[in-house]
Length: 188
Image (cartoon, rainbow, N blue to C red):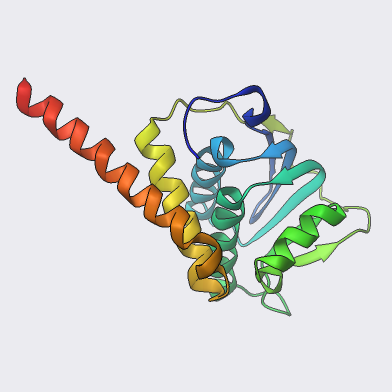
């Protein structure tokens, strides 16, 4: 759940290489709720610039939590609706480990992605840049986590049983956080 970042919840390192209408995003470490907002902001920005195809280099990604997977699945849905690739899938998962594939299959979202193990052949287009993690509030983390879990439930009805309590807790927590902000503003 969102909160202070503990050592095992250290955000993943996110590297990005952008081309004309594509981007390659490399995830190093554990992609969790703490890195989901940075990832979402990055992809939103790239999509505004005309991103048509996204390669997710997962060769060094150890694990993804459900929040990060929900954000990724949301982009899979959005980009596939606008896509032009032959099979309609606009996000390529490059070299995900067996554990990641198992999580993605278990959540019923694998159909949104193209999975490859072959070497990447990226055109020369610039240098790889590390994404600087943004400072986000507990409210922003909670909202992002709630949206991600709702997305997973919308994509696959089997996820409703998995995440019903999580989304209820997150919605209540978000309401408390908003109420606390409203109370503080009223006192001023």
